[in-house]
Image (tube, rainbow, N blue to C red; front, side):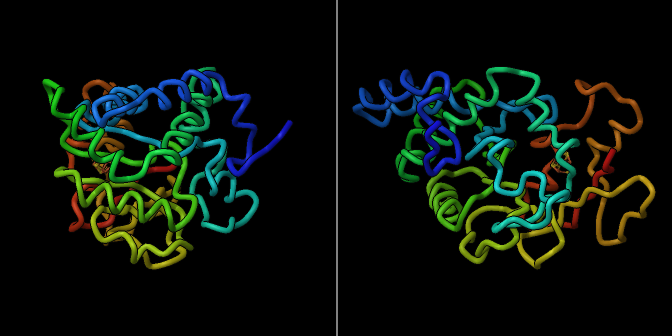
Amino acid sequence: MEVDHFGYDIESVEGIDGLRERMSNAESVRDWSFILGDYISAGNNKISKTTCIFNMNSAHDCPNYATRENGESETGYCQVPAESCYAAKAENIYNAALPYRRRQEYLWDCMPPELWAKAFMSLNDRKRNSFDSIRFSEAGDFRHNGDIVRVNKIAKIVDIPVYTYSASHKLNWDLATEFTINASNGRADYGDRRFMAIPESEEKPDSAVWCPNNLQQNDGVPAEDRIKCGDCKLCINEEGPDVAIHLH
Ligand code: SF4
């Protein structure tokens, strides 16, 4: 198997030829907006449908995957054990998830951020219920400073809030001036707030508030009835307290 800069054989990713053909035929921002539209999702069972979700890579290819077990990577350290990573679980359960996210990574690396932002705005103009925020990295994480620069350029162009969570504490987060970063490890002072996963045996620090969705989950409220990210803006706003969830 030939492995390229992605860390896996891109040629063996299901659907990559079809994506390449669409990309090579795209002539306008509108054309690109239809391609991008097939590689974003509108919320999930925790995030409101008016939040656009895009991944720069999969959980399996995340630069910080399984660092809790193996020690820090070149980019950072994940506070969640690999076995508790929801994004990796989804990729193990649903066959289509990993190739889809690998195609997202390919698209991400091929689209200049200005084009990504314009294509996004074009697709958002067509939507009846427009997106009101963009969440990067439901799966995966920032791989290098170039990813920060690209998201920052996008956030400067689109007229809605952009936010993310990252455990890549070794990157240069001073480059992120236009979007909100929830720092998911405490090994460096970076981002706009800490987003901490706390073992059930430990106390929450006074500086943090419990995530309301997580509180409802712990109280047995069904997923469809819980407060969703987007309706709750604790992690989207730059200002505000640290946020805590229970680690199960
Ligand atoms: S605190 Fe609010 S925005 Fe953050 S994860 Fe919980 S529900 Fe979502």
